[in-house]
Length: 87
Image (cartoon, rainbow, N blue to C red; front, side):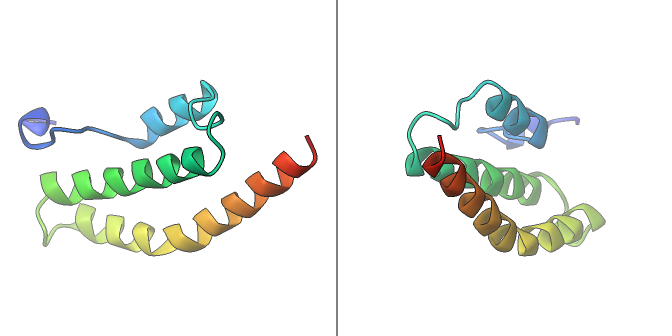
């Protein structure tokens, strides 16, 4: 996107998060790793808001998705804890 890196100084996107998951970058530090994953998700939405028009469809859709994040994050954390208990 034109000018994106001029506006967004700490870029993060879902493909980068997926890559970090696949590379095990969130696996090392237990709760700190889970917190880092959550922070990266929030950074995606912060960057979206920073770069896009506040009144635009992109920010509106991002806000809708952000509303789903706490419940989804909670589910993932529970799954993560269960997985660690049994390994």
